[in-house]
Image (tube, rainbow, N blue to C red; front, side, top):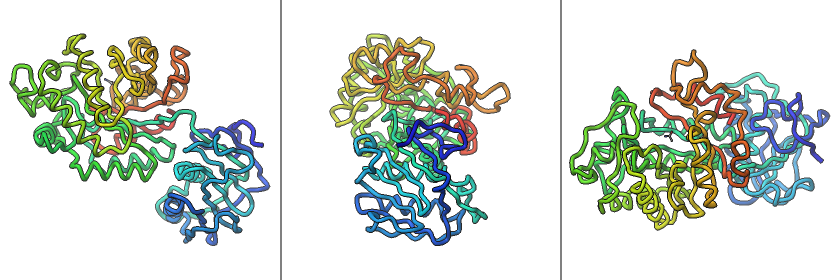
Length: 466
Ligand code: ACM
């Protein structure tokens, strides 16, 4: 049977994340050649994953890599076989779960077995990493395309493996988000949290409140490019692209603070009935929805209804951070009403862990970011039976500088070197139990970021470390 994975020049060399179990058999190494075929078994989604693999390997190898389906139960020579169900002797189906896979490299080829298409998809990400790095090139490379022999059995420790992208402080168009999805998929990230509204911009069209996008979407930090927003078709394209990469989108509308773009779009949302101007600075905590006005909840219900209709995933994130202009009692009132609205639309509330000041329902998820509270907001949540997504700013924030030489980013949480992003404990040194941790997330705030190159400079390699 496979032993614990280690990284000493074995089959696992270069794999990120490290798989659960691995064993190396140099005598069973295999090379992809011009005659290699991809064979997919029957079952939902296997063929699409086979097509994905062929599309990934064709440019650099220059090989045809024909994909055929239906005969994956036998293992034809010189083939990469993707098979659903029928787990191998060494790994039961229940161990692999919905996202795990069992990958065997033998002289005759590669066999990947999984219960679900998501597992096959993760298996082909591992295969990409087992091949020479030049397989990622977009033009033909010399090869050879050798894979070390052996077996890998892998499944995730955490159900939620997320990245967050702030498209408010600066707007990023659909192709940028899709490129980020491509990159995240290689590391088996399965959740993409999009921060869609803040003081500086509102980035998603809402039919019932059109000024949110038309006016609230017209600004950003510094206002160089005047913001932008996703039409519903744009947003659905992102959701579908993410789904095709087995990534679930979590949309966030930040409330009750971080709402200047909404307050600027509709005077009636303000307690005094006067709309403030758009905001292009970098301060936080100065805005608040009007907690005691009925129209606030009409607005929230309309927005959540339209967002829920665009969201196949379970979560709607309603922010809740840094509500410095909302009284403590108003804040609790607001969070409980917001939670009820999300649940009425068939979704679970997700929020920054400040929401744990309110009475939360068991399906709600609290995202812990503010390490300066020394765990108070996360333990307030876990004491209520609410699960945590760990995103402590001093380890997980991808917008913080690496060091004093970093030209982009902020550093209020301190410099975050690659090692800091890699070596930390999502259970916060035992402050919460591992079973309270739904997963981890790497937030990338965009006050200082304008381009995809800026995103990549900050995210990689730290997101891989997470
Ligand atoms: C946050 O960084 N205010 C969630």
